[in-house]
Length: 174
Ligand SMILES: [Zn+2]
Image 1 (cartoon, rainbow, N blue to C red):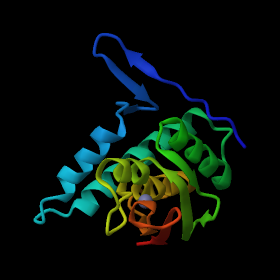
Image 2 (tube, helix red, strand yellow; image 1 turned 60 degrees about the vertical axis):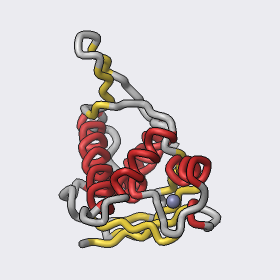
Image 3 (spheres, protein in one colour; image 1 turned 45 degrees about the vertical axis):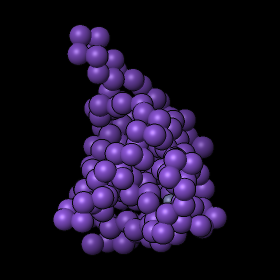
Image 4 (tube, rainbow, N blue to C red; image 1 turned 90 degrees about the vertical axis):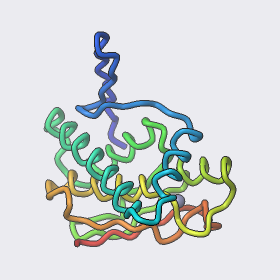
């Protein structure tokens, strides 16, 4: 298992913490799931795209900067293992990206902050709810292979917040 070099750059004047170029705010599940529900509620916006695309962009930009700072991390599977460590270190739970390849594949999140947070705050959902995780997977995969940000579509096929044992994701080239 490769070691993650987790660096927080804190700007005292601006009071902003950045991790590999991405501003990070450490919120609890109350904030994160309530924000998600607020974005999901209006039927006139494509909330799935908003939530997954934003997560994909952050993961892509952050991990791309990480790999630039760590040129010794070259192999895609090593890069994906580092991305999973970043995910865990940031408090989003655990995610296994080892079954992903250049053409996509599957990923699993045995412990998802969003699934566990949602059920503890609101109870079970009828549909999968880990949009952030789905987007993170797509962005991390694109960064690991040096592909464009919008290369992959990642969909949660079953979710612990909707009664599954854990959260499963399917990833394909768009
Ligand atoms: Zn889920």
